[in-house]
Length: 235
Image (cartoon, rainbow, N blue to C red):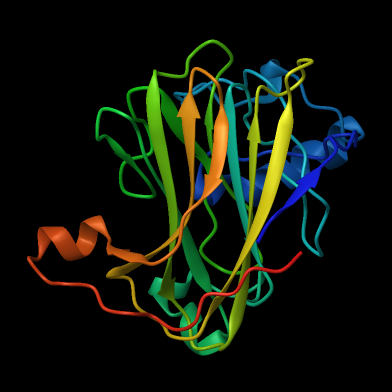
């Protein structure tokens, strides 16, 4: 099950595009009183900040999230933001890495290993815990057809982990609407994608999806994904 949400207007705090930039951005925030402009963004960032989306703050920081015709934001309730990246030794320190995946209407797969799709962009990735991860399509950029959304428990030893996915369409317009879904993850398995929702344009129709599918990692290794634990939806 899912529930509708009203847009929440909260001031942005900070942003990141590259995994190594978090400390640098905190230093910028301290030096500028928490105010960011494009002049503060490193020139090597390939994707500009085009619009702003918001998510409730957690213990570490709340990055500025790209939004537009479609915004998909993943958070989860486990991990340690102060640990090393989960796949680089952080697993033993309590890090948890849950990954967000979006397949575009033309079949392009957007996720941590391929951040830029035909229309969608992964602009925030998290490998330590809590999230967020964010994939968005800018205003006017959505392709006709269906975007498929799923998640995968890539790395971690904290079980169960509850993942929350917020799907938002037509942000900052009179047509804006959103839905939030939860999945309970009971096993670490990067080969299994847990279905969450689909979004069909041009109408921006959001529908919940269930079951599992092989991730791109599994497909590339010609392995078959199995069930990765129970799926639960909460209101």
